Image (cartoon, rainbow, N blue to C red; front, side, top):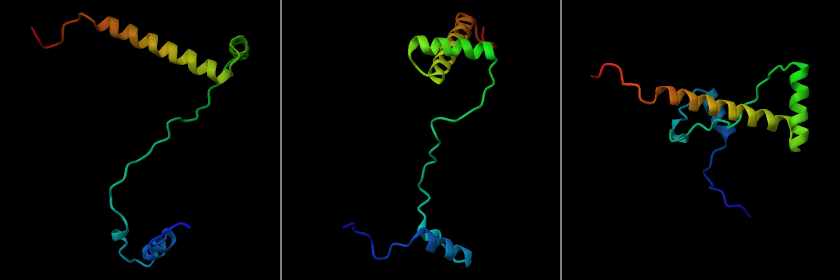
Length: 97
């Protein structure tokens, strides 16, 4: 059997206390961290020919269309990042002589 504290207050009871204007600060430690979802859903429109191409690639790799899109997008972003870094290598910083 699960052990619980006899003086444990439920969230519902705390909400009722707050509704009555009572001080509920003793029920909160203010030590928390915000947990953000690691993935977010987005909608993207693709032309029919591009979808057909993505589907052919997914079929050839035996993976989902979503996996192909994520992999190709990650690859494109990585290549762009490397290209930007390469342009900045060897350039002197502004304001320094």
